[in-house]
Every structure is written in C-alpha cells, then in structure tokens.
Image 1: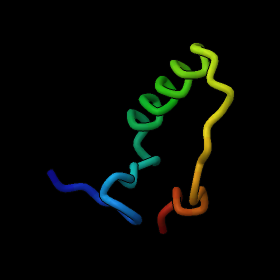
Image 2: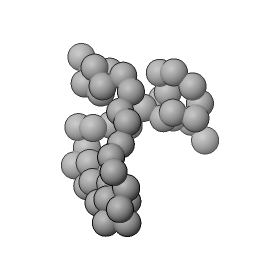
Image 3: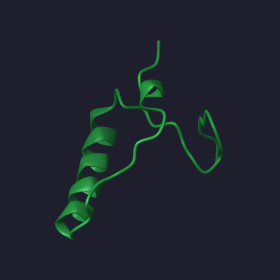
Length: 51
C-alpha cells in the first residue's frame, strides 16, 4: 500500500479537500465524543492545508 505521509508511516497525510474524507473523520470524532471522550489533540494543524 502506498500513501503520502509527512512525518511517520503511522501518520497518513489525509486529503482534507475531499468531502468524503472529512465526513468520515467527523463521524469518527462524533463516535468518540458520544462515548464521553473529552477532546482530541491535533498536532501540526498548520500542515493540513497544502499549496
């Protein structure tokens, strides 16, 4: 399997421009928030947007 990663192989670089990707991430976030998770840590937020 090949995919873009900017830091480590365990951290795939997601295509945030893709609406389906965003919807899946939002669903995952809501799943954990519904289970009582208090929040998420987002590292390197400035690297989400690509030129």
